Length: 154
Image 1 (cartoon, rainbow, N blue to C red):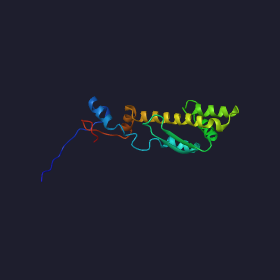
Image 2: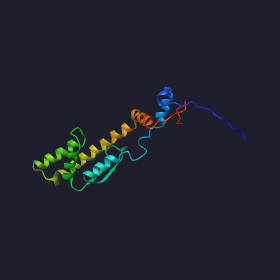
Image 3: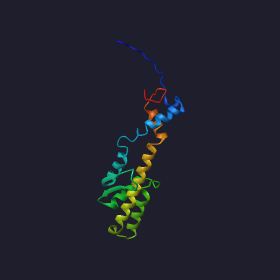
Image 4: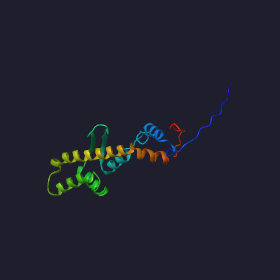
């Protein structure tokens, strides 16, 4: 029986060569999206009154949001997000239209389409960020990953 001892030099991400860093980023591209990364957005939507939340971030515009009370949902959005949120404008416009005397039955469908698009864009942006080099590097550093010289995780 042969017993060998091998020694390896271990590197933190910033210590790697540029080529090894690129390999690491390529190999860990899914590190931030291989779990329910969207769940906090879904949970907020449910807290505000959504009864169903389905989406596919890969298909532009595929989003289904079930809401029993659109006006109440819009009120909750306006009360809980800042005016810079993608969700704020369509919710506020819907409430303003109701205040102006428009009937919810007549404008509710258009409003829900706008909200679904806003949620889809919010999810798309989050996914894009989570798969960015910046976010991957943050995860690597936060978790103290170490690497071999070739970029493989130690």
